[in-house]
Length: 48
Image (cartoon, rainbow, N blue to C red; front, side):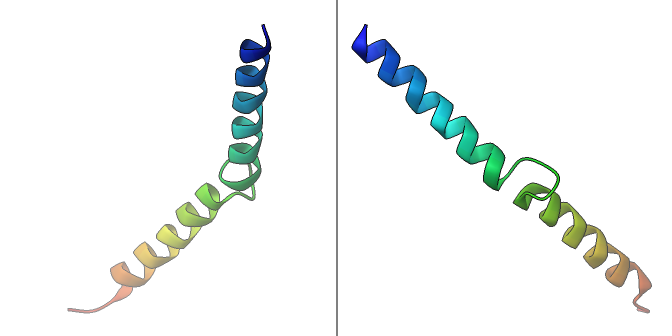
């Protein structure tokens, strides 16, 4: 029983850390999308 409880708590902490750092509106996943969009715009505006 203790092993199951510890496993559930570890998974909960891992999910919470993921959501706090990568997920969400201000996470790194959204930042990478925004920076990629800006880079795409700059590359498209360059003249060959």
